[in-house]
Image 1 (cartoon, rainbow, N blue to C red):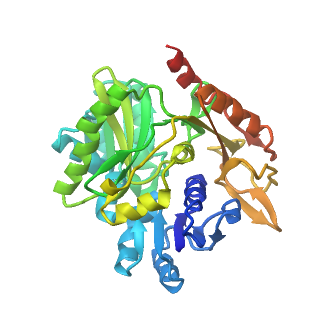
Image 2: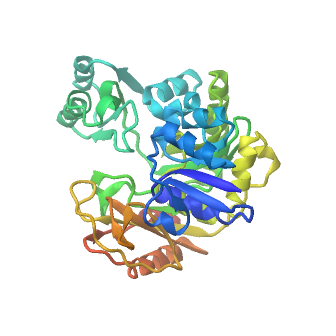
Amino acid sequence: MKVMVVGGGGREHAIIKKIKENKNVEEIFALPGNGGIAADATCVDIGAKDIDKIVEFAVSNHIDFAVVAPDDPLVLGAVDALNAKGIKTFGPDSKAAIIEGSKAFSKDLMKKYNIPTAQYETFCEMDKALEYVQNCPIPVVVKADGLALGKGVIIAETREQAVDAVKTIMGDKVFGDSGNKVVIEEFLTGPEVSVLSFTDGKTIVPMISSMDHKRALDGDKGLNTGGMGTIAPNPYYTDEVAAICMETIFKPTVEAMNKEGRSFSGCLYFGLMITEKGPKVIEYNCRFGDPETQVVLPLLESDLLDIMLKIYDKELDQIEVKFSDKSAACVVMASDGYPGKYETGFEISMPLDKNIYVAGAKLKDGRLVTGGGRVLGVTETAPNLKDALDKAYETVKSVDFANAYYRKDIGKRALMAERN
């Protein structure tokens, strides 16, 4: 069986490593992949947003199954284009991917179908948005409507910051056309939980919960990043909370998308806040999260490709999805300066017998060198979270590249929650 995975980051590396476990897989192609992924798949220099070339490659190479992992190609219609050529594909079509492609759409969906979320207002004109933030409760959250590499959200703790956020997104267009419209919503408090889920549009199966660490610096300080590390399961996601989420959020979201004529098939990501009034949705993603995938998939005991095939056939209810009862921890090693300015091109030395998912690296004269902000994620599993974290940080010591930076407190909040 020939499999093609679209994307080139740590998430895609984790997906590829898991798909490799299926005995029917003969060859895996990564488009474009990266220098680290090259150890597990054949990398092809085709960008994830180059839909025409992706389809052309899939057809000419007789790909049996495709996985479209990143948000951009999903929103742009990669799945639609591949399916039109008879290529079986995992992921939502563009009509369903709008659940991440437009925050205004997703907020309106939740409002229409009474799915719990923060109160909000949407603005297309900067003057009206500025007028609103002059009087709204503070803190407040300002979000670019469209895709922004996971960075289009600004938490404004003062009114001045709220004004600056609107001007930055709508005026300066730091996120491009994604900022043509903004969603301004109330600031929720409580533990955050990420829940990835498998769904074929009929059945929804939540995966093991996780906790991301978005801030660049220890103590949850510094700028927001694409994620500096993750742990799973999330101790705040109790059985009671999970049951509430299933009945008030997960099932209603799938049903709402069906009623809108946008049936969702693939991985639906729920970003949740466990507030005093119960769990609420912060955001939806139309794909596997990064770096949540790097702790969730190592705990998946069922075969990932078999699950994906069942989802394509709308038969998710006919396969058992089983997860280990262990814990997992991922520590992201980044280039010093990320998410701001940083240098690249430094040789990477790392053990080959560990679960290390490469995100920002390339091959240069046969050597693996840094090529991005988030360079790699070191993942370890163990019977409990403390041991998983200890193992992950021990493995980090065996990885070396110049200007390496990583947070020293991944999982600290989760360990405190476990003790309380």
